[in-house]
Amino acid sequence: MQAKLEARNISHSYTSNRNVSEVLRDLNFHADENEFISFVGPSGCGKSTLFNIIAGLLPPTAGGVCIQGETSTGKPHPSLGYVLQKDLLLPWRTIIDNVILGLEVRGVDRKAAVERARPLFDDYNLSGRENDYPSALSGGMRQRAALMRTLVMNPEILLMDEAYKALDYPLKIALESELLETVRRLRKTVIFVTHDIEEAVTLSDRVYVMKARPGEIIKEIKIDLGVESTDVQERRMAPAFNDYYQLIWKSIAEQSLPAKTRKVA
Amino acid sequence: MSARSQLLQDGGKVRHTSSPRAAGISPARETLLVWGLQALILAACLLLWEIAAQKGWISTFLFASPSMIFEVLSRQLASGQLFNDVRVTTMETVLGFIVGGVGGSLIGLVLWYSPLVARLTRPFIAAVGSIPVLAVAPLIIIWFGTDITSKIVIVAFSCVVVSLMSSYSGAQQVDQDEINLMRSFGATRNQIFLKVVVPSSMTWVISGLKLNIGFALIGAIVGEYISSDSGVGHSILVGSANFAIDTVLAGLLVVMILVTCFNAIVRVLERWMLPWKYA
Image 1 (cartoon, rainbow over the protein chains, first blue to last red):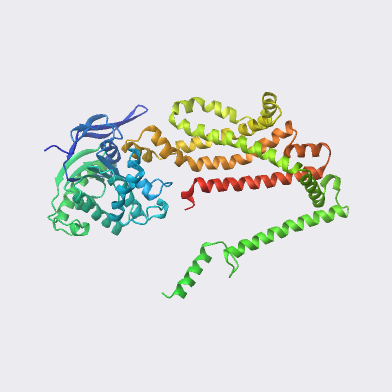
Image 2 (cartoon, each protein chain N blue to C red):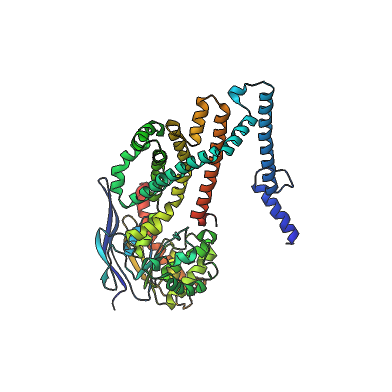
């Protein structure tokens, strides 16, 4: 089966005044249809760079990204949509105008765009808030609107960068459950980039564990919690959760602890 | 919690978060009180001035008096001179402001397209911006003549660089993540400019315009001082040449009123252009 997204031999370095710093080294990964994968690693593992490369916003120094067999290296692909931790709602646009921004850019007329967005407002409990400005909404609502802005484009792949980091815990759990339910129902492929091991284990089908400086994939772990529910709290309580958590934590710790002791010595 | 205790608690909150205020006075009433007191202070000053002039404590030749200023204004109003002067000065200010302020803002925004052109032109723009309007005004009068055109050019000159700089900085501060988001939707550069760069720079553009309405009026008055046959600046100039202090002070009063009106109009414009800030 052809992977939805495939990346081969991705390496990236930043050059600044004679200094070359290697951020990513030889990353190979893929995401299949209807699969939820996560990248988890310590800070400095090149998360944002990786995100920008997958999103097609940044061409890597070496290697390439393919989406459904088409090269998408360094150029955003229409079947990939992303959500960041920052909701990036434009403050001068009402919620509805923010949600249909992408459709507007692609030349869909306003009436048709609003029609397409309407069901999302019901799904995400934002009906009645269409004509509010983002500043009038709570953090959770804003993050939902940001997800709606991505979903209305009907992307087959969703790329997310710590999208729920800024939210308080119960809200984070609620939005994660909502996300999991949505992507399963719509059979989306999701690529999640996070520091949060718990988040990675509860949501993913497969996790790539990374180390820092330079960012490299050190382990690939298939997750099967044995729970069908999309309720994140239920998944968190699955007996297998702790084993996966330990496994990922150990691989990250093994990589970062020796470096620390070297520094001290 | 009962409605009453809720009310008490809310009342307590208000008192904590606002500046010290006498108990039992609502903000609206306090504003009214402040206005009343300010009017009273003004009236007292004017009265003192009038009495001092009438009693001969101060020279009316040097300081005039409120009643003399009032007389000048009513005479000018009756003859139509006041209306004409205000009309001319307002025309110069507004037209120059539109050419310089709006034109400068547009140029500043459009420079977003080309960082190279922006870099190339930066020293020249800074050089033009460093010229005091008073220094260049005589030259503009020679080039454009003594009628209203030269005043409009002087006003535009005194607005253009501030507007340009301010809108250019606004365009430079656009969030790169917002631009990336537009790119991910496949937006063209023109779409990014119109849908993100322009609206997100609007606060800067407006703050440039707010500064400039004052500069615009200065430009108009300076132009009228140098060469003119009408306008509030002309009236002040003629008054001072004839040592008619009452006419000069009447002109200053008109200028003050004009500035207040212009500021109010720009504030309305701000609310209209940035509705999301006041929602």
